[in-house]
Amino acid sequence: MPEVLTVLEPATEAVLEKVPSAGTDEVDEAVARARAALPAWRALAPGARAAQLRALADRVEENLEELALLEARNAGKPLASARSEMGMVVDTFRYYAGMPERLMGDTIPVAGGQAFTVREPLGVVGLIVPWNFPLTIAAWKLGPALAAGNTVVLKPAELTPLTALRFEQLVLEAGIAPGVVNVVAGHGSVAGVRLVEHPDVAKIAFTGSTAVGREIAARAAQTIKRVTLELGGKSANIIFADADLEKAAAAAPWAVFDNAGQDCCARSRLLVEASVADRFLSLLQPHVESFRVGDPLDPGSMMGPLISAKQRERVASFVGDGAPVAFQGSAPIGPGFWFPPTVLCPVDPQARAVREEIFGPVVAVIPFRDEEEAVRLANDTIYGLSGSIWTRDGARALRVARAVETGVLSINSNSSVRVSTPFGGFKQSGYGRELGPHATDAYTETKTIYYATT
Ligand code: NDP
Image 1 (cartoon, helix red, strand yellow):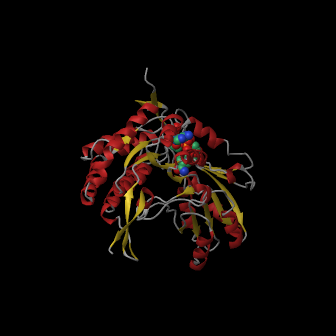
Image 2: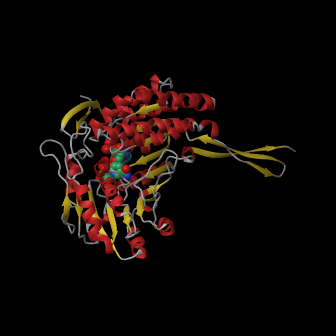
């Protein structure tokens, strides 16, 4: 009997679909198809490759509602969020459709001839993605990889393979040749490991936990594969006393409860200037208590369930362990992996809720005395992915933004990710940048050509 992945709907715990599980043979076959498709894809004229990426964006847009529904049900996220994520998938392919004609090099004056550089595709690229934003994070890698002339093998998370499998069909419908995009839905410990070890795979682009990222980097070293890693986070939401406290309190729940907190950019540490901490918490409490948790397909739901029973158990383990509940929202009972929006205070600075990525709708409140302490606390973590600063003092906002060690920082906003701006981490949040105008650099090699003129 071939092995299957039993895909659940987290809001009901019912089986949504069963799909064949890719093992090492299927990964090898996918890599062989990607290798066979490479010469024709990289030889396409830049304008033709751009046109195919635009056609792909159109195909995703035409099927946006179906993809959004599938993502909402499989990942347990509100349908409106899934729609906006699929919109970002469309935008990502349109943005990177502009790149094949902009992969430029330098001309360099040298003695006795002319030197210039060109950007060459890497070859077959392996993409390994998590379950929190399944197709969106895949698109961040697919867009620049394909624009630069690579072919790809995409491994979605075993919990959320459905939109990737549907996407593979849309790629063909868009007129892109078979073998350019290959999806292998299987276990990380089998399909993922094989992709990382495969000698014909030139690069792994990974998003997921820091533990698995570390393992991938070590394994990829055996074949000197290129690796980019977008890993965990423990971002700070820093509220200064001079901020618009009402606005900051209304935004703070979204900074950590969006996508049920299963977001590498989740601001799971709420740093509040001590002089306004009581006032800020009293402003925050009603927003948390009214944060509506429920059926992802109900338009009133602001948050769905967690992805799995295992994830719920993990999130629950952070509560109470040196970090008591100050206040909480409510969540449905019964089937579904529900967890209420939860604010922890006062917290022990060494509590796991302060040190580790929670990846659930739980935030730890930490008071600070002054700007210097705010920066010190914000940087007191192995991670460095995202964060926010709330203040009306522009000079301070820019000082703190430069001092906090993270890849993305937002002032008076929760924003972290845009198609046109680089995204990635400092420290153990990973290396390499996705999105923005330079993402194709991570999917190309620079070649120098020297032409003798004497
Ligand atoms: P993982 O890092 O385990 O999974 C991410 C992807 O890597 C999945 O496709 C997974 O496959 C695959 N994978 C797992 N092990 C290997 C391996 N040895 N070699 C190659 N690929 C592998 O994340 P989890 O889903 O287990 O989540 C655990 C924790 O990780 C979360 O609680 C959160 O803290 C963090 N996380 C962070 C994310 C981020 O965006 N930064 C995203 C997801 C999780 P499969 O799942 O199919 O087995």
